[in-house]
Image (cartoon, helix red, strand yellow):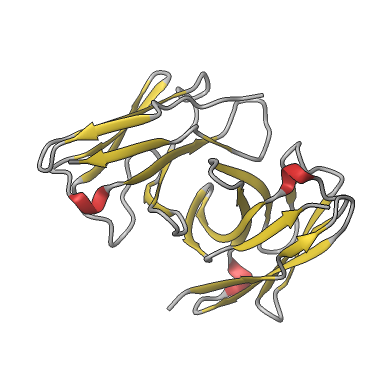
Length: 118
Length: 109
């Protein structure tokens, strides 16, 4: 069974940092590209960042470019998102998902909440 | 920035067909993906590449795309289909990221 479990969220002050993790199991992690998607409270979904399976390519939304860094460790079956210089508007549930084909995100975790507040 | 526009809400009676539209300038050249999100849950992929249905998704979910508009149809809608639905696609600028639509709340009553 495919499972994705996010962790690392929490309450952080503006300007602070966090490292979000996504532990994958039930599939060959190293053969799939992965994505982070976020959802602000009561709002819609927003694509944040994607990374290819062999770490050849990493893409970012303009809203996070230069502040967030996506990475992965295929030996540990883990995906990461380093989030720096956090702003109030970064407050959201952050989901990791597996990319099945191009932009088809076929399995999702349950999300981890990041709250940016003083 | 690129935008995908959806109606805020759609209401349908049980057993009827719900249709959710998604409009975007790049849709003639780009695939559309549809995600269902029930309250308090993670999204679920229900349609990919305009009209393909992942395994485990009921046949009552179907997708189509023509010109600048894509449509998700739920035939014989059930109370369990009440959820927010989001389309997703990419623009034609070469940007490798994507954009979610504004979302549509489907009510079955």
